[in-house]
Length: 445
Image (cartoon, rainbow, N blue to C red; front, top):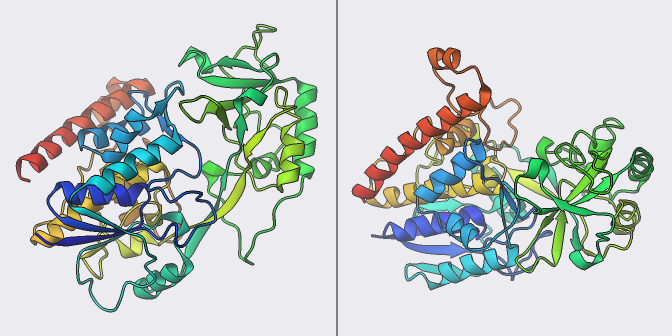
């Protein structure tokens, strides 16, 4: 049939490569690690997760669930890997990040149609793509390739700063103070919770807001992604912002008192061995020594051993509405596709979704067939519609939400006044459309 070129071995890249190969194309998957490392990656494994190990909610009736379910029904490799390496996390889908990356790397390297090429791609070349090419280099795209992409698209570079949360050794958490529970009992005892009194919170807040941060490396305006703000940035917006954000105590009861604590820090299991826990929502860019000093003020973490400190990295994305259409092909060259966070979607599963569609359409580029557009009611369709059509003046990365999905008809909104009921109907309608779409896809493959 021909060859598809995929640049980037992250979540979007491996999904794109897998879909293209499963559809009959030969695939050359380029990954620059370990020859060229990034500021955040630690291994040479494909699909390495560098931030939270959570793929967000998998509770039926939610927008993140809908996106995952569409991918599962679309035979997603990444969703298969997530199911195989899942760790307890209440209603969320979280994975053992090491086993997850190993699972995907093994599957990709064993596929007879996929060749993994360990080298850095610094240029896309001149003119139209000689072979269908998917750029899935993620938020940590190398400087050389970023410059070439911007030269080719004729657009200014866009960026925002993202941060990584600390990870704590499980046996260093004081369980005489901390307790296991999930909010409102969803998931049993999947999380470790560190409760705070008003006085303990005040001391922590004062230490956090006065702690020293790591200076940014480049003299650029800082664009924080609102859904992943560093805790010190949240704290500076007001004394109670943490208590109503990542440290909210709602749905939790301290077994020592039977009452809801003033504030609470949650830790989520990182691996199947349950020997490491990540601090939920505690991404930050404080100096390492400052992190240890401040975070040890949290009750239960006074003797914590930090397996990973929080850190900051620079995320790059293109101005997709000026560059892409809903098929994820570039308007200037329909054989060149973008997928993953570089398109302006934010989140692991959102990246996988764009990789899924780009992989499908790269095969159609080989065949000379009409490209797929995901159903308008679907979550994948909503994401692709956003990145290709939203107003470009202030384009910002986005997660999947019901705000992106097509609203219910007026008569249904009037009939179902409860928001939860309306959301369930939206999910059911979207999956019905998706099932018809997938059935036609498989029957015509």
